[in-house]
Length: 370
Image (cartoon, rainbow, N blue to C red; front, side):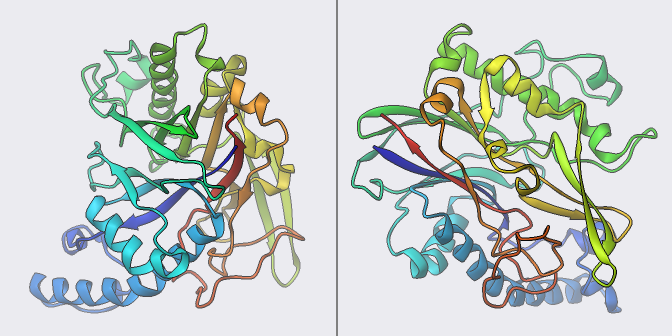
């Protein structure tokens, strides 16, 4: 029996407005920054109008990207709450796929903006096998001390042992597919921070992601037993905000682009895959074709990288040795630079930078759960 599983950072699926840009220009949308705004009341009115005007196109594109995954279960990141998810599913996704994702699960995590991880799933697979919810466990409360993960690198960042490990959550969802158990660990690790102490943003925030990865591994080992965990049926799904390789982009559209794959010695992904504990099955795709996000700070800094993962337990990966995930890129903005032969038709109304489905691409795979 097969299950179609996908992960997608849906990018700020909110059901409230963010007015923090009035006092913090780093949070202010670039369109509002063009105008002189008299006071906070005027700012709030303009921000409401701006957000509403952008939302409809963006969420149509998000729904198209989700529909393209053909997933039975969707693991999502950056969801405000279940009310926002239900409104999106009813108002947008329903028009694409019908009454598919009746079951929705989420809990409040630790993110300062209130964005959480969530799961939507059908009640049966596309082949008619029942998908049944068993239980949900949040690990948002877990501290560095609880798992013995505090270290000098974290202390140097001013992080105390009693603080919580996960910047959002590690949401553990137990289900059965046709009566067979499967556990999902849905995560969204700390984002790469601004440069600090002479380090770039990725290196400066790396200790936190390393700890988050270590925490996920220990949670799985505690659940199934350290010696048996890799041989159980589970998947780590989500945005890990890190990569162990990237495709660096040079040149321009007039003289031609150049693409150079580069590996990274240090990555939090290694903490999870070490010793064959699990497999990043996106790495079954060609080296140049694994990316799920286009990063740019202008022509001087551009690369493609994988931030979104389906990490299968050793046992599940071996059982699905021929499964190769799909990456849905039709919702990417036109500014995204595609390597030769990879460009795809964009969804209708995709803009140069926005609207877009998300800054991330969904990743989906069909798994045999026999």
